[in-house]
Amino acid sequence: MPIATPEAYAEMLDRAKAGKFAYPAINVTSSQTLHAALRGFAEAESDGIVQISTGGAEFLGGQYNKDMVTGAVALAEFAHIVAAKYDVTIALHTDHCPKDKLDGYVRPLLDVSAERVAKGLNPLFQSHMWDGSAETLADNLAIAQELLAKAAAAKIILEVEITPTGGEEDGVTHEINDELYTTVDDALRTAEALGLGEKGRYLLAASFGNVHGVYKPGNVVLRPELLKDLQSGVAEKYGKPAGSQPFDFVFHGGSGSTAEEIATALENGVVKMNLDTDTQYAFTRPVADHMFRNYDGVLKVDGEVGNKKTYDPRTWGKLAEGGMAARVTEACGNLRSTGTKLK
Image 1 (tube, rainbow, N blue to C red):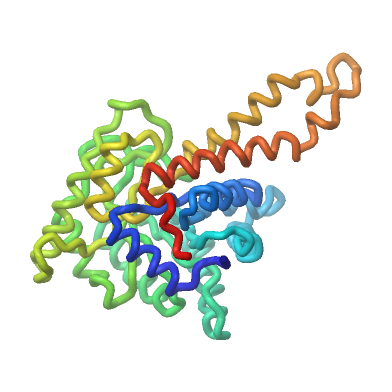
Image 2 (cartoon, rainbow, N blue to C red):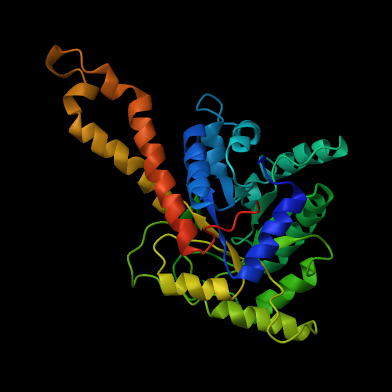
């Protein structure tokens, strides 16, 4: 199956919302981690989302010039070719783009897709994220309005983060405190500015105590039940039926969450959950094991020649791919997307 068309992506999100499941959104930084993500989705028989952060795109652009657009476009083009060999549907997304990087990342990528659409092709990416959580909500939503119009014209879904997620993500840092909880008023202001689909479809990253990165149980207080309040408050304001869910929510900082927290989030409209920290470790752990077990083979110790079979990147790279793929498959199970692929 090729990369999702705009119609297929919309169907994926609709099915997730109706079925109370979500897609893992896996950050990738190389062709190898891309294959690991694709393999994990295929083995789970789940469609999924692959995403590239600004830091990931910079890394993909190469250390010589670190160009984010070049890195993102190159991997996306590669994904359009190799994903066709996997029997699942994959959406391409760009993750966390703050204000100071919009002109060097999301806006140029929107232009790339707009040019493709003008030629009768599908967009290169299926969704992009604007992270305005470091801005005032008024400024955040003003920029979101501009980006949503451009995204809709290019048949792309926009993701917006309206309030802070704690921890650090590609240089954007927020303290872990009481501000990490979106209010009903925040949600109402978002609906007023961006509409409820009539101005273009968007995903909403609301905060319910989320924190990026590594944390131990008990250090973070997640309140996924808050999402129900946000849905109900907006539904009531706009005359929607009781129990309806106007927003398609995104769960950020999903690594380390409990099964109960995830289940509550799914019941309240989460259709996408980001995973990066856990999959990074799952990729690196088998490599570390290989290096420790084959120390005198991967290094030319005491003037010896080492063992080419152990330091060949393909040897340990296959182990890394397998480790990360297994974690992606596990995430599909946790989010109830296993066995739900479109075809």
